Length: 201
Length: 365
Image (cartoon, rainbow over all chains, first blue to last red):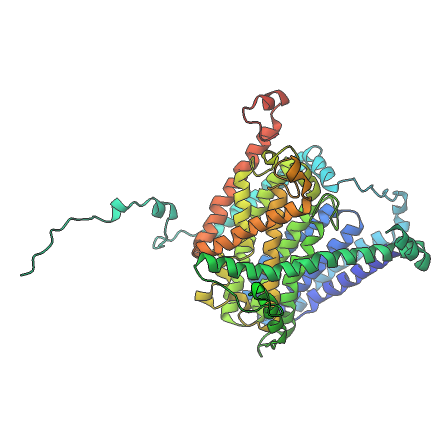
């Protein structure tokens, strides 16, 4: 499958380049946009793995909603780059440790031969009528329903907490209530009086 | 087709020949979709100006014609506008971020055109018949927002930035209501494939269309679609009277025209999706002789034109919404309605067969 290989290397090259760009760009807006690009190329790679539901959901959720808000915030920030670089050496050992763990993890995947990964058979390619979405939905709502519900409750709690933390009630706030405005009738507001015409003196 | 494929295989070998053949056929299909679409956009602008003009008791464009033919007066207007736009200079503001400034219109038009890949025009006529078609459309339309925010930011101008922020918040909020309305559709059809969604509405007449059981969702989807494309009465992102023209205030010539093209092709896309998901796509309204003789493609076009007329009608009729009321409509009215409808639909789907059949108006199943 030489055509698939070409696609894989094409996407991988863009993914690596854009991921490098995310951490090296000086302008945070450029970084955020490169992160969007790496999400999209990552979705392309997932499509090659026949995970079309996850690939499209990645674009829909991360590119379409999360990164929009991210970009939104980054654009409005007035970031001082010198202040950002101040703590670089202080945090360097911590970052290096995370990088080391990631390198070990990736090498375990890449050098799978030495860890016996080759004993896992390569999954069979599915037919065209196989729907990824249906299978995922079936699994989530039957076998993994408790884990799924737990994750949903966690997200709900986080959402309510975020709203509760940021919601401030102001006493002097002036706002209109459209349903009240719509309910207003002519009789409540104006009074038509019948005045006798005045005589010219 | 077969013989052409054989020739490809003979010249380039088995594997590459097939790949190149599918590439060539797909490119042909893409051109066959995009060229009529852009022509449709050009004449939609003409239709908009004419229809709104007649609604306001004016005449509209009535000068430019082809080869001096008198009864075609006005029909040359979109072509003349396009030629004018191409001739104009693209001005790049000195303090703008040049790369992103040029990239923004490209990012706006790309998803607007790419979403058309999965649209079925008739039972056989579809470029990519993928299983997750509806999800693909949602993903593509949600990417359109990037062009707008990048344009607003890269222009380095206050009005453009305000327009971009308004637009981003509005599109992200209405996307939720839109997505939930579509969840109802896919609960009914039990498929994400757009062709299957249309086939699910097959029956004897328009009573089988999802329009009737999902009527509130139809309204929510249509209104969210208007808000999503930043059209009047939700066009606060452009708001001529407050922030000049919003995010594209600094754009000129072809760069501006590309934004314009994207907006109108998004309009046509929303109209197409509405007709596919609620109005039965290529299906005729009644399955009897004179209606079934007309090809499905014509029916789809008629439905699209019908929905597009609503877009123009809204623009001529309603005053612009206030921004806080746009947010209120999206979050406090549409999302609760759609959530209630999803629960209701799920409950009906879970009823046992015997009870469902007793339902007095069994429009759901």
